[in-house]
Amino acid sequence: MNVNEIAPKRIAIALINGPNINLLGTREQQFYGKETLPDIEKQIKSLADELLVDILLYQSNHEGQIVDFIQENRFTLDGIMINPAAYTKSGYAILEALTAIDIPFIEVHLSNIFSREKWHSESIFSPKAIGFISGMKGFSYELSLRGIVNYINDNKNSE
Image (cartoon, rainbow, N blue to C red; front, top):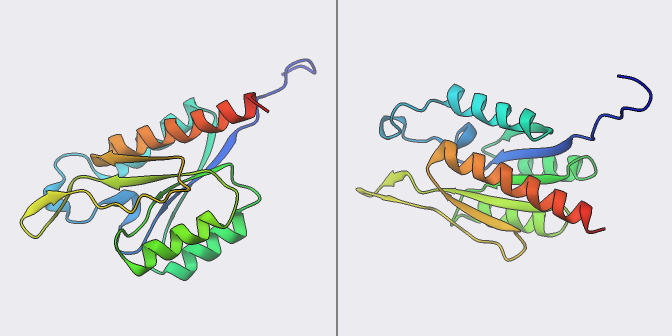
């Protein structure tokens, strides 16, 4: 690279999964078909490279650790993709912590959760979120990553 070429700044985005949601959102694996966690993680990282994104994967089963992670990284992150534990005290507390800081976030909700003999989506839908994606696992994360990157780029260009 010569002096006249400046590499574009990479966007820093955290993908956070909340309590009771294993990394990248899989729970009852017998219902998830052929797509595996390593496949999803590889797809996300490949898309992140294409979009010039540094992606940070974070998962915890403890609401306080997630809130601490958000607080500790609030000055270095450009955006957050979060799959909170919906309809739980923890999920609401995590979204409340996000609402208190000025980082755009998008909620990811999986429509392929199987419980009580049916498939359903779990959601909270925080009014502060810039968007919501609900769908099948790998596809949901890809759409969310594209959505948050587009939002960040659009807002940078409008400043």
